[in-house]
Length: 350
Ligand SMILES: C[S@@+](CC[C@H](N)C(=O)[O-])C[C@H]1O[C@@H](n2cnc3c(N)ncnc32)[C@H](O)[C@@H]1O
Picture 1: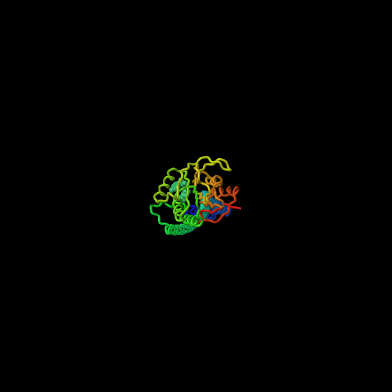
Picture 2: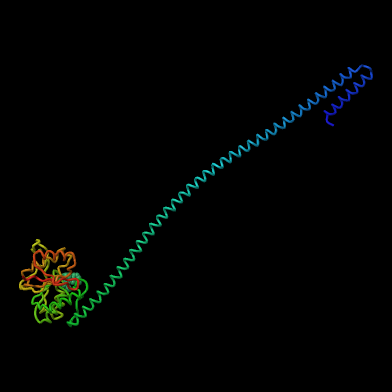
């Protein structure tokens, strides 16, 4: 039994025995009541002390609970702080991630733009390549057609004449076979007695063949280059045509023209009067923009009335300019185009 209960039992027992004893000794009831009252006061005090002690215990418990609660709250505050820090960290990381994603999206957009640019470039290139292929094909076709046409013209030349010695090349600087066919036919038709050619070569040989077939006439070719002049004379001799053709070496020298002094053949023109056919195929273009212009003003007095002029390479800018300048000082008719490269002109007689 707890000490407090033992004390209360002892108090009650002492009070009861005391009261009984006082009554038994005839001390009167007052003493007994006093004793019982004292016992009751002690019991009340004991009870009060117990309540106080219970209250103190409650208080202690409550304080302990409060401390636990405070500790828990402090822990929760710390956790909250950490949580808050974590949230802030996450927000920062999320923002960084967002920025990175935005940057990547920008890059993807930029790459998309570049890809479109590259695609456009590739499309342009493919289109250019297609057009280039097409143009190459048509040029090849044109070259192949031209080659066939030139071969046909050569066959025509060889069908008309029977060259009995090696022939100089007809490629490069020489007049093309199509123009040569036109030239020999022109000589057959016009039957010129004097042909002057500016710029010697294969053409001089074929002109000589055409004159010999006519049975009359001669060609005098002027050449600024000593080697080519000698080579042309040698070939002419090898073909036995020296009675029909002579090449005169005439270096280029300043020559008086209506447009001032210009380089042209310093030729010996003695005996060259009444030229019926003048062939202008030199000097080479490299010697000057209007290299071939002087031919007409220099030889005009020596041309027969109604003389024909064959102007080769008439489609080149220098020759177009020369022809325009000729027309300013001379009455010229265009007879026709010869094989797309040369123009046949004629001095107007009226
Ligand atoms: C257009 S070429 C004259 C070609 C000539 N009328 C013919 O059809 O064969 C003009 C000048 O070029 C020079 N020449 C000729 N044949 C040449 C060649 N194969 N290479 C470089 N120059 C040449 C000569 O001096 C000639 O007077």
